[in-house]
Length: 229
Image (cartoon, rainbow, N blue to C red):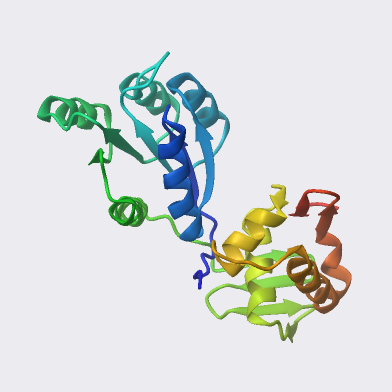
C-alpha cells in the first residue's frame, strides 16, 4: 500500500531515453512523488525555471543541451537539488558536476530503489518539510495530528478521504487526473476503476459541507483544489 506523502514532492525527470524516464517515473510515483518529464536539456531548463521542483534527476549526455550545461543555467536562477545520471562514471565527470553544484550522482545502469533512496536523502538534506497546518476560510487541516476541522469542529474522515484531501490540498491549483490520484492514494498497482475515486470524492465533499466548493470537478480529466473561488 502506498504511504501518504503529506507534502507532494515534485520531481523533474530529464533523460533523452524514454524507457529510462518511464522507469524512474514508475518508482517515483510509487513513492508518492509528483513527476514531470523533459527529453533534453533545453526543455529541462525551461521547465525548471518556470516551475518549483523539489528535485531534478537529469542525465548528462543529452542532445541539444547536455546535463552539465543545463545544470549551469538552472543554478543561475534556482537552488533546486540536482541528481545527475552518468553513463560514464568517470571521476572527471563527478568533479566537474560537483563544481557546478550537483548534489549527487548515480551511474547507469542503476538500481531504481537506490535512486529513490538517494532522492530521499537529498530531500532530507535540503530540509523539505510540509507545513503543520493548512487553513482556508473555515476549513483547517492539522497534518501532524491527522485531523480536519470544519468551522472549528473535528470532521471524521476515512483514511482514503483524508489522503485524497491532503493530496488535493498539497497540489492546489494543479489539475490532478483520476489516474494520478488513484496511483498516489490507492497505489501504483491499483486495479479498480474511476468509480472508486468518484465515490470517495462524493463522501469527502459531504463531510466538508460548505467547503466542498474548493474541490472542483474537471470533466473528463479529474479534480483540482481551487485556492480561491
